[in-house]
Every structure is written in structure tokens, then in C-alpha cells.
Image (cartoon, rainbow over all chains, first blue to last red; front, side, top):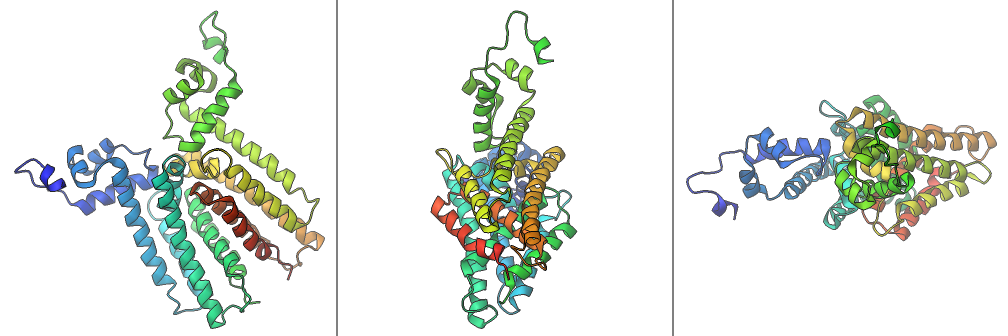
Amino acid sequence: MPQENRPRGRPRTFDADAVLAIAQDAFWRRGLAGVSLDEVSAATGVARPGLAAAFGDKRALYLRTIDAFTAQMDVAARTLMGGSRPLRVELGAFFTGAVDLYLAGDEPRGCMALCTLPVEAADDPEIRVRLGAVLNRTDALLQARFQLARARGELPARTNIAGRGALAAALLHSVAIRARAGAGRATLLAMIRAALPLLCRAD
Amino acid sequence: MPQENRPRGRPRTFDADAVLAIAQDAFWRRGLAGVSLDEVSAATGVARPGLAAAFGDKRALYLRTIDAFTAQMDVAARTLMGGSRPLRVELGAFFTGAVDLYLAGDEPRGCMALCTLPVEAADDPEIRVRLGAVLNRTDALLQARFQLARARGELPARTNIAGRGALAAALLHSVAIRARAGAGRATLLAMIRAALPLLCRAD
């Protein structure tokens, strides 16, 4: 459809991935309501009709950059927690990877999903569902890793997987917000180091 | 100052607390960028010059409602965790109280501070500091309760207070976001019940 809406003889000359990266940067910093399409247009050099034809309205563009972010997170998390190393090593790598991502860039950013979806979620049911899906995917990944640890004997058979998984997910949510509040790398890693023994204790 | 800026003979006829409550409701739902002063004006019946004279600009009004929210939270938390009951009972009351607050109202709201400050915190250094202060107060409260538990023998002398405190705070942050994502009371309470034994275990 976007193809047919473009004026004849004026092919889309912009690089969609580059536009998405610039839009993602703006939405990550200021969220959906804090960014205007005029600003995205100015930053990308693509006029608003071109943005609309390629990506839809501002909310659709925002959701597309959120999807790109969470897909990237999912791949990284699955890679880091594939089960080839001990539980504590993999959880440590998972949280350290999150800190690296949350502190990338000039300003403290935290998690794009956990720091910008919630403000929209109260009044926008679709974004609420989207936020829930982000949380569910992390929960499933962490629960699966604890289950694997229990099945392998890294954790005792009686281990309360629900409790460990909830606290491990909570630690990620907390680090996501703390990074946005300006907590530095040393502070966040110290917090993770202090919490890991409790999450992984084998007795 | 607001007194002197008012036109002569037109005393402020609105109830400031009622206006703040209405503004807080809007900001809690949609955050600073998602609410316009025109909307607050329409909802409260107070013209924009009246709002400006009494509360300053939109951001100042938002921060005032955030301060009111966090002050209320602090009082509730201190009351629930005063140390008169066992650690597990007090932590349970603390988290249950948070769930009650986060699920109050028609829509799932979560925590006003943790769900609306982060989106503004990346580009607004003052709001970043404000978010950090909110996190610090909860950390101090939880760490103090775990220290008390250790001093009293509710927890062993070797207990890693930093790790317990970080995970307990993380659980609060997580519940704050999950409530906004639509998680129901039963789900959140089950999560808390699963996590409490790990946070409070005495061995």
C-alpha cells in the first residue's frame, strides 16, 4: 500500500533502517508522547508524508522501534542463557549484558521497553498488552533456565522455580529503571553480584 | 508571589488540593508529556493563568503531584515496616499495600513514580535526580528493615543485607510495572508469596 500512495516518479530514496534507528533513538530517550513526527522528520530528512507512507502514524513507528528493540533483546538473552554454562555464569552474563545495553550512549537510557512503554500502558490497551508480552517473554526465559538448572541438579529438586524466576525478572526490571535514574556501571554490577548468590543458591 | 500576580478583586476561588488530585490522576495515567495544561484546566475548571499562578508551569505541577505521591508512599511504607512484627509479616504487608495502591482505580495504574518518571529521566537531569531519590528512599527503608532483622536474630549474622535489599526493592519495582501491564491482584500476590521465602530465609 505505501508503494501505491507514493507520488509517481518519486521513489522512496531513504534508507528505512537508518530512519528506524534515528526514530528509535528519539523514542528511547523521550517515549511516544515526548517525540513529534516533525522532530523525526527533521532528524531523518524524510518529509512527514514519506514517513507516513513507509511506517504509518507516530504510534505505529514507535511500536515498530519497540519491536526491533525487544527482538534484539530476546536474541541476546537466548544466546547468553542457552544452558551451555553453569546457571550462575549465565545469569551473570545475562544481567551484565543488560547493563551494557542500558548504559550505552551518551545519556543513561535504561531499557527502552520498560522505561517508555509503562507511561502509555494505562490508557492504551494495545500498549498494555505489548508491555505484558515483553514481561512474559523474560519470565518464560528465566523460568526455563531455572527449570533446566533444577533438572540438571544445579538446584535441588525442591527449588521454588516461581520464586527464583520472579526475583530474577524483578532484578532485570530494577536494573532497567536504575540505569535510567543515573546509577553507574559499578553500582549496578555490585547490586547484581550481591543478588546472584541468593538467586542461585543450591541449598 | 501567586497572591500578588492575581488580578485585583479576583481571589483564588478553587480548592488547591482538589486541583492537585485531579492533576495527579491525569499525570499518573499518561505522564508529564501525555497531559496538556489545557486538559488539566478543563478537568479542574481553573483557567490556565490561575493554574500558572498557583502551581507554576506544567512540569512544576507534575513534580508537585509526584512529591505528594511519594510522600504518601513513604508514610505508608514506614508504618507497615516499623519493626513491630516479624520480617516476613512486615515485608508481606509492604508488598500487599503496594499492590492495593497500584491496582486502585478503574484502570491498572502501577506506581505513579516508577511508571511515569523514567520516560522523562533520560533528557531531564532534574527528573533523573528525582527518580534516583525515589529509588534511594525505598532502598534505605528496605536495607534498614533487613539490618534490624539481622540485629535481632531474625536473620543470621552472616546475611548479605545488600543482596536481600536489592532483591526486595527489585520486587517492588517489578510489581509496579506488572500492575501497569495489567497483571491482576491474584497474579501479583502469588508472585510475592513465591518470592518472600527467598527474601526472608533464615539459613
